[in-house]
View 1 (cartoon, rainbow, N blue to C red):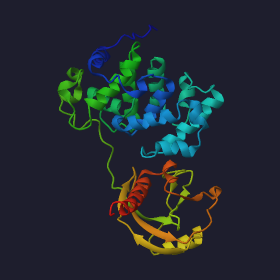
View 2 (view 1 turned 180 degrees about the vertical axis):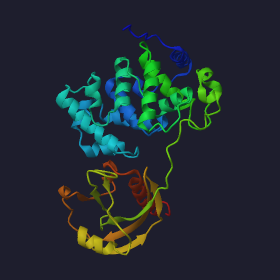
View 3 (view 1 turned 90 degrees about the horizontal axis):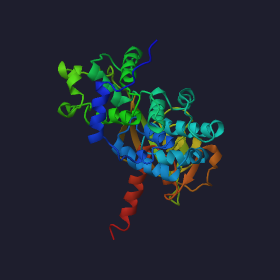
View 4 (view 1 turned 90 degrees about the vertical axis):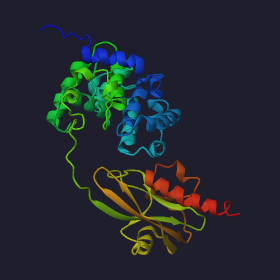
Length: 363
Protein backbone atom coordinates (compact mmCIF):
# COMPACT_ATOMS: atom_id res chain seq x y z
CA UNK A 1 0.00 0.00 0.00
CA UNK A 2 1.57 3.33 -1.01
CA UNK A 3 2.42 5.82 1.73
CA UNK A 4 0.10 8.73 2.12
CA UNK A 5 1.20 12.04 0.65
CA UNK A 6 1.39 14.36 3.65
CA UNK A 7 2.17 17.51 1.70
CA UNK A 8 -0.38 20.25 2.41
CA UNK A 9 -3.46 20.04 0.23
CA UNK A 10 -4.75 23.32 -1.25
CA UNK A 11 -6.95 23.95 1.81
CA UNK A 12 -4.04 23.61 4.24
CA UNK A 13 -1.64 25.46 1.94
CA UNK A 14 -3.92 28.49 1.63
CA UNK A 15 -4.74 28.42 5.31
CA UNK A 16 -1.08 28.40 6.31
CA UNK A 17 -0.32 31.28 3.96
CA UNK A 18 -3.13 33.25 5.60
CA UNK A 19 -1.85 32.33 9.05
CA UNK A 20 1.60 33.67 8.20
CA UNK A 21 0.04 37.07 7.53
CA UNK A 22 -2.93 37.21 9.90
CA UNK A 23 -2.70 34.40 12.46
CA UNK A 24 -2.50 34.93 16.19
CA UNK A 25 1.10 34.43 17.25
CA UNK A 26 1.25 36.38 20.52
CA UNK A 27 -1.11 34.38 22.74
CA UNK A 28 0.41 33.78 26.20
CA UNK A 29 0.35 29.98 25.92
CA UNK A 30 2.44 30.18 22.75
CA UNK A 31 5.47 31.62 24.56
CA UNK A 32 6.70 29.16 25.54
CA UNK A 33 4.46 26.57 23.91
CA UNK A 34 5.07 23.83 26.48
CA UNK A 35 2.81 20.78 26.82
CA UNK A 36 1.47 22.02 30.16
CA UNK A 37 0.64 25.50 28.89
CA UNK A 38 -0.98 24.14 25.71
CA UNK A 39 -3.02 21.68 27.77
CA UNK A 40 -4.20 24.34 30.19
CA UNK A 41 -5.14 26.73 27.39
CA UNK A 42 -7.02 24.04 25.47
CA UNK A 43 -9.07 23.12 28.50
CA UNK A 44 -9.80 26.74 29.37
CA UNK A 45 -10.82 27.46 25.77
CA UNK A 46 -13.51 24.79 25.89
CA UNK A 47 -16.78 26.76 26.10
CA UNK A 48 -14.84 30.03 26.66
CA UNK A 49 -13.52 32.71 24.30
CA UNK A 50 -9.87 33.68 24.01
CA UNK A 51 -10.32 37.22 25.30
CA UNK A 52 -11.84 35.85 28.52
CA UNK A 53 -9.32 33.04 28.93
CA UNK A 54 -6.13 35.15 28.72
CA UNK A 55 -6.40 36.73 32.17
CA UNK A 56 -7.40 33.44 33.79
CA UNK A 57 -4.56 31.60 32.06
CA UNK A 58 -1.92 34.09 33.14
CA UNK A 59 -3.14 34.08 36.73
CA UNK A 60 -3.33 30.27 36.80
CA UNK A 61 0.16 29.58 35.44
CA UNK A 62 1.66 32.26 37.68
CA UNK A 63 0.24 30.43 40.70
CA UNK A 64 0.69 26.86 39.41
CA UNK A 65 3.42 26.89 36.74
CA UNK A 66 3.96 23.14 36.33
CA UNK A 67 1.96 19.88 36.41
CA UNK A 68 3.66 19.09 39.72
CA UNK A 69 2.55 22.41 41.22
CA UNK A 70 -0.99 21.80 40.02
CA UNK A 71 -0.99 18.24 41.35
CA UNK A 72 0.23 19.37 44.77
CA UNK A 73 -2.19 22.27 45.15
CA UNK A 74 -5.32 21.85 47.29
CA UNK A 75 -8.45 21.48 45.19
CA UNK A 76 -9.84 24.63 46.80
CA UNK A 77 -6.87 26.58 45.44
CA UNK A 78 -7.44 25.22 41.93
CA UNK A 79 -11.16 25.96 42.03
CA UNK A 80 -10.54 29.48 43.35
CA UNK A 81 -8.20 30.20 40.42
CA UNK A 82 -10.87 28.79 38.08
CA UNK A 83 -13.79 30.62 39.66
CA UNK A 84 -15.71 32.56 37.01
CA UNK A 85 -14.76 30.36 34.05
CA UNK A 86 -17.63 27.97 34.68
CA UNK A 87 -17.88 24.27 33.80
CA UNK A 88 -15.92 23.46 36.94
CA UNK A 89 -15.51 19.80 36.08
CA UNK A 90 -12.73 21.05 33.77
CA UNK A 91 -10.76 22.29 36.78
CA UNK A 92 -11.33 19.09 38.75
CA UNK A 93 -10.21 17.01 35.76
CA UNK A 94 -7.09 19.17 35.37
CA UNK A 95 -6.22 18.61 38.99
CA UNK A 96 -6.73 14.86 38.83
CA UNK A 97 -4.89 14.53 35.51
CA UNK A 98 -1.90 16.42 36.91
CA UNK A 99 -1.79 14.02 39.85
CA UNK A 100 -1.78 11.08 37.44
CA UNK A 101 1.04 12.70 35.44
CA UNK A 102 3.10 13.02 38.61
CA UNK A 103 2.35 9.46 39.72
CA UNK A 104 2.70 7.71 36.36
CA UNK A 105 4.53 9.97 33.87
CA UNK A 106 7.35 11.59 35.85
CA UNK A 107 5.39 14.80 36.20
CA UNK A 108 4.99 15.40 32.48
CA UNK A 109 2.20 15.00 29.95
CA UNK A 110 2.76 11.81 27.96
CA UNK A 111 3.60 12.00 24.25
CA UNK A 112 1.66 8.80 23.57
CA UNK A 113 -1.80 9.56 22.20
CA UNK A 114 -3.60 6.74 24.03
CA UNK A 115 -2.00 7.60 27.36
CA UNK A 116 -2.73 11.29 26.89
CA UNK A 117 -6.36 10.78 25.84
CA UNK A 118 -6.88 8.50 28.85
CA UNK A 119 -6.26 11.37 31.30
CA UNK A 120 -9.37 12.92 32.87
CA UNK A 121 -10.84 15.72 30.76
CA UNK A 122 -8.63 15.07 27.73
CA UNK A 123 -10.54 13.70 24.77
CA UNK A 124 -9.50 13.06 21.21
CA UNK A 125 -9.43 16.67 20.08
CA UNK A 126 -7.62 18.05 23.14
CA UNK A 127 -5.04 15.26 22.95
CA UNK A 128 -4.50 16.02 19.27
CA UNK A 129 -4.08 19.74 19.99
CA UNK A 130 -1.48 19.08 22.70
CA UNK A 131 0.52 16.65 20.56
CA UNK A 132 0.35 18.89 17.48
CA UNK A 133 1.16 22.20 19.14
CA UNK A 134 3.55 21.13 21.89
CA UNK A 135 5.33 18.24 20.16
CA UNK A 136 4.77 18.95 16.45
CA UNK A 137 3.18 15.53 15.94
CA UNK A 138 0.62 15.05 13.21
CA UNK A 139 -2.78 14.71 14.89
CA UNK A 140 -6.01 16.38 13.77
CA UNK A 141 -8.29 18.35 16.06
CA UNK A 142 -12.04 18.95 15.98
CA UNK A 143 -13.04 21.62 18.46
CA UNK A 144 -16.09 23.84 17.99
CA UNK A 145 -14.36 26.31 15.68
CA UNK A 146 -12.92 23.56 13.49
CA UNK A 147 -16.28 21.78 13.28
CA UNK A 148 -17.87 24.97 12.01
CA UNK A 149 -15.15 25.59 9.40
CA UNK A 150 -15.24 22.04 8.05
CA UNK A 151 -19.03 21.70 8.13
CA UNK A 152 -19.34 24.83 5.99
CA UNK A 153 -16.41 24.16 3.68
CA UNK A 154 -17.51 20.61 2.91
CA UNK A 155 -21.26 21.26 3.16
CA UNK A 156 -21.75 18.68 5.91
CA UNK A 157 -25.34 18.62 7.09
CA UNK A 158 -26.57 17.35 10.44
CA UNK A 159 -25.87 18.40 14.02
CA UNK A 160 -22.13 17.87 14.72
CA UNK A 161 -22.99 16.30 18.06
CA UNK A 162 -24.34 13.23 16.28
CA UNK A 163 -21.82 10.41 16.03
CA UNK A 164 -22.33 9.87 12.29
CA UNK A 165 -21.72 13.56 11.55
CA UNK A 166 -18.70 13.58 13.82
CA UNK A 167 -17.17 10.68 11.93
CA UNK A 168 -17.49 12.60 8.66
CA UNK A 169 -15.97 15.74 10.17
CA UNK A 170 -13.09 13.79 11.75
CA UNK A 171 -12.32 12.28 8.35
CA UNK A 172 -12.16 15.76 6.80
CA UNK A 173 -10.04 17.06 9.70
CA UNK A 174 -7.56 14.25 9.24
CA UNK A 175 -7.43 14.65 5.47
CA UNK A 176 -6.54 18.36 5.70
CA UNK A 177 -3.95 18.11 8.49
CA UNK A 178 -0.48 18.39 6.90
CA UNK A 179 2.60 16.46 7.89
CA UNK A 180 4.67 19.62 8.31
CA UNK A 181 3.98 22.84 10.23
CA UNK A 182 1.23 20.96 12.03
CA UNK A 183 1.40 23.28 15.07
CA UNK A 184 0.87 26.33 12.85
CA UNK A 185 -1.90 24.59 10.92
CA UNK A 186 -3.69 23.64 14.13
CA UNK A 187 -3.57 27.23 15.36
CA UNK A 188 -4.54 28.50 11.91
CA UNK A 189 -7.75 26.51 11.58
CA UNK A 190 -8.77 27.45 15.13
CA UNK A 191 -8.02 31.11 14.34
CA UNK A 192 -10.05 30.93 11.14
CA UNK A 193 -13.09 29.68 13.02
CA UNK A 194 -12.66 32.16 15.84
CA UNK A 195 -12.07 35.31 13.78
CA UNK A 196 -13.38 34.80 10.23
CA UNK A 197 -15.69 31.79 9.94
CA UNK A 198 -17.64 32.91 12.99
CA UNK A 199 -21.06 31.62 13.99
CA UNK A 200 -23.07 34.67 12.89
CA UNK A 201 -22.21 36.80 9.88
CA UNK A 202 -18.99 35.08 8.83
CA UNK A 203 -16.45 37.28 7.07
CA UNK A 204 -16.39 35.28 3.87
CA UNK A 205 -14.68 38.04 1.88
CA UNK A 206 -11.66 37.72 4.19
CA UNK A 207 -11.57 33.92 4.17
CA UNK A 208 -8.46 32.39 2.57
CA UNK A 209 -10.31 29.20 1.58
CA UNK A 210 -13.58 30.79 0.45
CA UNK A 211 -13.10 29.64 -3.12
CA UNK A 212 -13.80 26.00 -2.28
CA UNK A 213 -16.47 26.54 0.39
CA UNK A 214 -19.71 24.66 -0.31
CA UNK A 215 -21.72 26.72 2.18
CA UNK A 216 -20.65 29.99 0.54
CA UNK A 217 -21.29 28.68 -2.95
CA UNK A 218 -24.76 27.35 -2.08
CA UNK A 219 -25.82 30.10 0.30
CA UNK A 220 -25.78 27.86 3.38
CA UNK A 221 -23.51 29.78 5.76
CA UNK A 222 -26.46 30.65 8.03
CA UNK A 223 -27.62 27.03 8.11
CA UNK A 224 -24.33 25.22 8.64
CA UNK A 225 -23.30 23.76 10.88
CA UNK A 226 -26.75 22.41 11.66
CA UNK A 227 -27.73 23.67 15.12
CA UNK A 228 -28.54 21.35 17.97
CA UNK A 229 -32.26 20.52 18.09
CA UNK A 230 -33.82 23.08 20.38
CA UNK A 231 -35.80 22.30 23.48
CA UNK A 232 -37.39 24.42 26.16
CA UNK A 233 -35.27 24.54 29.28
CA UNK A 234 -37.07 24.15 32.61
CA UNK A 235 -36.71 26.71 35.39
CA UNK A 236 -35.90 25.69 38.94
CA UNK A 237 -36.24 27.89 42.01
CA UNK A 238 -34.03 28.11 45.06
CA UNK A 239 -33.46 30.48 47.96
CA UNK A 240 -29.82 31.16 48.80
CA UNK A 241 -29.15 32.11 52.39
CA UNK A 242 -26.48 34.69 53.11
CA UNK A 243 -26.12 33.88 56.80
CA UNK A 244 -23.78 36.01 58.89
CA UNK A 245 -22.91 36.04 62.56
CA UNK A 246 -22.30 39.09 64.71
CA UNK A 247 -18.69 39.28 63.46
CA UNK A 248 -19.85 39.49 59.86
CA UNK A 249 -18.64 36.01 58.92
CA UNK A 250 -20.69 34.24 56.26
CA UNK A 251 -21.73 30.59 56.43
CA UNK A 252 -20.56 28.53 53.45
CA UNK A 253 -20.79 24.82 52.71
CA UNK A 254 -19.07 22.57 50.23
CA UNK A 255 -21.35 21.16 47.57
CA UNK A 256 -21.44 17.41 46.84
CA UNK A 257 -18.63 15.88 44.72
CA UNK A 258 -20.95 15.38 41.74
CA UNK A 259 -23.57 17.54 40.05
CA UNK A 260 -23.84 21.28 39.50
CA UNK A 261 -20.98 23.25 41.07
CA UNK A 262 -19.51 20.00 42.37
CA UNK A 263 -17.00 20.40 45.23
CA UNK A 264 -17.28 24.21 45.20
CA UNK A 265 -18.11 26.25 48.28
CA UNK A 266 -21.53 27.85 48.09
CA UNK A 267 -24.30 29.34 50.18
CA UNK A 268 -26.83 27.22 52.03
CA UNK A 269 -30.06 26.79 50.07
CA UNK A 270 -33.67 26.13 50.88
CA UNK A 271 -36.87 25.83 48.90
CA UNK A 272 -38.26 29.20 49.98
CA UNK A 273 -37.91 31.98 52.53
CA UNK A 274 -40.72 30.60 54.67
CA UNK A 275 -38.76 27.46 55.52
CA UNK A 276 -35.42 29.26 55.97
CA UNK A 277 -35.58 29.61 59.76
CA UNK A 278 -36.44 25.95 60.30
CA UNK A 279 -33.75 24.80 57.86
CA UNK A 280 -31.11 26.95 59.52
CA UNK A 281 -32.03 25.73 62.98
CA UNK A 282 -32.39 22.03 62.14
CA UNK A 283 -29.69 21.57 59.49
CA UNK A 284 -27.10 24.15 60.50
CA UNK A 285 -27.70 24.78 64.18
CA UNK A 286 -28.18 28.51 63.57
CA UNK A 287 -30.81 30.74 65.13
CA UNK A 288 -31.90 33.45 62.70
CA UNK A 289 -32.44 36.85 64.31
CA UNK A 290 -33.55 38.81 61.24
CA UNK A 291 -33.78 38.37 57.47
CA UNK A 292 -34.30 40.46 54.35
CA UNK A 293 -34.98 39.35 50.78
CA UNK A 294 -32.65 40.71 48.08
CA UNK A 295 -33.23 41.10 44.35
CA UNK A 296 -33.78 37.76 42.61
CA UNK A 297 -31.75 36.75 39.56
CA UNK A 298 -31.58 33.92 37.02
CA UNK A 299 -28.47 31.87 36.27
CA UNK A 300 -28.63 29.60 33.23
CA UNK A 301 -26.97 26.21 32.84
CA UNK A 302 -26.87 24.12 29.68
CA UNK A 303 -29.93 22.11 30.69
CA UNK A 304 -31.99 24.40 32.96
CA UNK A 305 -32.41 27.92 34.33
CA UNK A 306 -31.93 28.52 38.04
CA UNK A 307 -33.99 31.33 39.55
CA UNK A 308 -32.28 32.45 42.75
CA UNK A 309 -33.88 34.48 45.52
CA UNK A 310 -31.16 35.63 47.96
CA UNK A 311 -32.13 36.01 51.60
CA UNK A 312 -29.78 37.93 53.89
CA UNK A 313 -29.93 36.47 57.40
CA UNK A 314 -28.39 37.76 60.63
CA UNK A 315 -27.74 34.92 63.07
CA UNK A 316 -26.60 34.63 66.65
CA UNK A 317 -22.89 33.90 66.93
CA UNK A 318 -22.11 30.22 67.21
CA UNK A 319 -18.80 28.32 67.45
CA UNK A 320 -17.12 27.91 64.09
CA UNK A 321 -18.34 24.74 62.42
CA UNK A 322 -15.53 22.23 61.88
CA UNK A 323 -14.21 22.20 58.34
CA UNK A 324 -14.54 18.43 58.09
CA UNK A 325 -18.32 18.79 58.17
CA UNK A 326 -18.16 20.60 54.83
CA UNK A 327 -19.44 23.80 56.47
CA UNK A 328 -17.54 26.75 57.86
CA UNK A 329 -17.83 30.45 58.66
CA UNK A 330 -15.62 32.75 56.62
CA UNK A 331 -14.81 36.42 56.97
CA UNK A 332 -14.87 38.87 54.09
CA UNK A 333 -11.09 38.51 53.76
CA UNK A 334 -11.22 34.70 53.63
CA UNK A 335 -13.95 33.71 51.20
CA UNK A 336 -12.45 35.36 48.08
CA UNK A 337 -9.69 32.70 48.12
CA UNK A 338 -12.20 29.85 47.98
CA UNK A 339 -13.58 28.13 44.92
CA UNK A 340 -17.00 29.74 44.60
CA UNK A 341 -19.53 29.58 41.74
CA UNK A 342 -19.47 32.83 39.79
CA UNK A 343 -23.04 33.91 40.68
CA UNK A 344 -22.37 33.25 44.38
CA UNK A 345 -19.13 35.21 44.25
CA UNK A 346 -20.92 38.12 42.51
CA UNK A 347 -23.72 38.01 45.06
CA UNK A 348 -21.30 38.16 48.00
CA UNK A 349 -19.31 40.95 46.36
CA UNK A 350 -22.51 42.93 45.84
CA UNK A 351 -23.67 42.51 49.44
CA UNK A 352 -20.32 43.29 51.02
CA UNK A 353 -19.44 46.16 48.69
CA UNK A 354 -22.84 47.77 49.20
CA UNK A 355 -22.28 47.67 52.96
CA UNK A 356 -18.69 48.91 52.64
CA UNK A 357 -19.89 51.92 50.65
CA UNK A 358 -22.58 52.81 53.14
CA UNK A 359 -19.94 53.71 55.71
CA UNK A 360 -17.34 55.89 53.91
CA UNK A 361 -19.44 56.83 50.91
CA UNK A 362 -22.10 58.59 52.98
CA UNK A 363 -19.66 60.32 55.28
